[in-house]
Image (cartoon, rainbow, N blue to C red; front, side, top):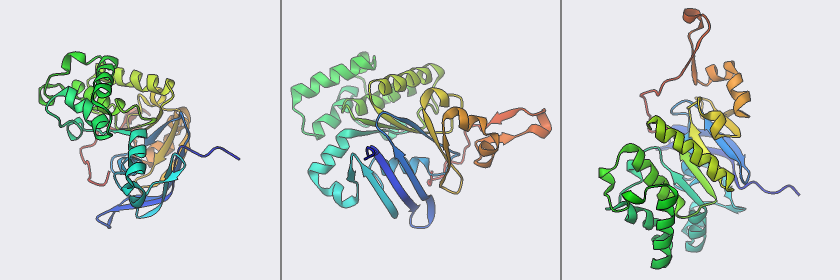
Length: 271
């Protein structure tokens, strides 16, 4: 029998407030150790799918299985199941301010392990390891509001990695970061995957796609997955990229050059 996918969603539908569609009949399986990019224009449903994978939202229709168990509102009410699920999957939000809220960096990173009931000395050791791994030990006693955007991103990632999850979800990991932090984060994702972590990331950054993913699931603006393939295959399919609004066609003005979609300003709540 074929081994079961690590994460699997089948026929997912979700609408915000019951009337703003975010996902429509989405089916996707992610195998252990894979790096999967959810690719699509703003508002197509990528972030919503990540929130369902993290157990923050629950689909209106369809099912979600993770680690060979059904993930539902009911199953997550079981404390033991919830603790197991939460320790195995970690979510790095697009906006670090939505994630970082403790008085100091050290307390921020300790928050997850403490809520999981880990013992104080073990937590302190793990926090020290994580600070060292992400090269932010000198920030340990600073308040998050004193940090730069890049530093805040590192702290947000540290607060997830300290739990040593098997699966890491990233929402637009390279968006709004300075080039040095972008490069650092791409290298970190490659390194984490090399250490056996499964990675799912939402992005519309075509430039770093081949570095970040082995496989892409392409969303249309109709909130469903319309194509899947390697980054190279997807990037070579100009008609697909045009159809899903990831590139603009300026060929009649500029002799065939392609302009990659800039960061569009209309961040809908339905993204």
